[in-house]
Length: 352
View 1 (cartoon, one colour):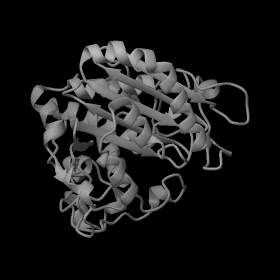
View 2 (cartoon, rainbow, N blue to C red; view 1 turned 30 degrees about the horizontal axis):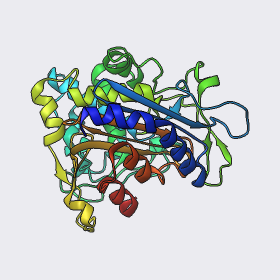
View 3 (cartoon, rainbow, N blue to C red; view 1 turned 180 degrees about the vertical axis):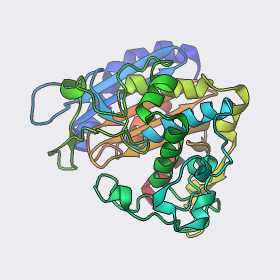
């Protein structure tokens, strides 16, 4: 899209298009949405609905959402920064950094590396048991297939990597993230832990019927799912990934090019499998617009998503507090980027 087209055509249609987006959100029973679209130095924001359907008040730029699995990308960025500084090696078994009791009877799991975690090749299940339960920390964790073989999405892997990094640096993930990410990138509304300041600004989750289901006030940081943030903050993070801020040129290149196929042994992943691969903590998609990096988040009644096109200098960060939050993404992406093949969404719909 040419810059002149953006200036003279998109601006007059903005109000009409936002009304269209709101109509889409209403049809899918979404309670609240917060998103930020960027193109070069230009930023558009869109807010819709309520943080809590049972109370007065509207979603605004300060409303804090659960980022869900977008949390994983923050740990990935931290690990790549540490690897740049030779603090950690992407190919050294994590068992050399941390003794994980949950895998003590699984010799194969002892060979899992940070690179395997970032590329979801640990062989672990997504979760051995509910990570929010008291039983989780003491549950047995076993690999389903030999580590390093093929893509198999796992939150467990990121929790293992978190523990290894925390043990290596002798600090909690929250403190590490503050030092490595939140302060350097000026992400003032982000935390892996619930903060008192979120009591008023924190959104509540809602099921697919629009009924308020509550919110989790995390008291322990979890790299796989506990990040609390805003679309504005996370958009800053996406720009940092896009530009390679804080990373060496070599590591920044590896972020997008060190990829594996998402085709599992037991699935073809459909046609989308030819257009998607997985990098060092990020999904990689190729469509008519070129190569993009992306990820999604799903904490049940909180859904999130981002996508960035480095060559176009365009990105979108999207957060919702509804069980239906991901259903509108094809229409949202079509509006901001034009009608395209969104292979990442087709794959999500098929595989998850």
